[in-house]
Image 1 (spheres, rainbow, N blue to C red):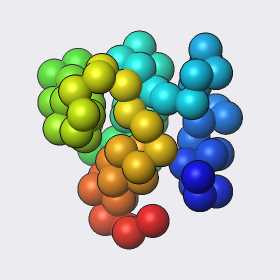
Image 2: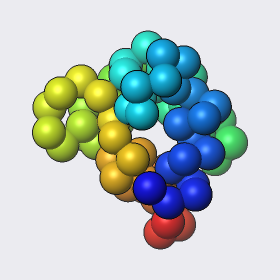
Image 3: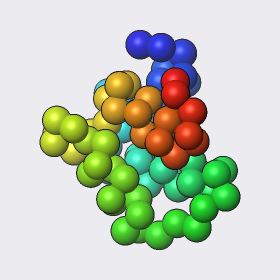
Image 4: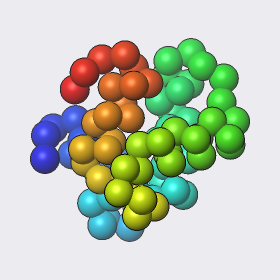
Length: 77
């Protein structure tokens, strides 16, 4: 796992299962969007979460997290 994903997981993965579930993602995605200067609502968060949960397990793993961050920040990780 790369350093960026590891740092995100250490902050937002409250149950320490090395993934971000929907509850944890609300804070993560909200923080990312606010840091990018974007207004957010629950629908934005849900849409981004579902778009990046490629395997459909209702959790974001390290690779999915990296792609989410790249999309929101416009920077490839």
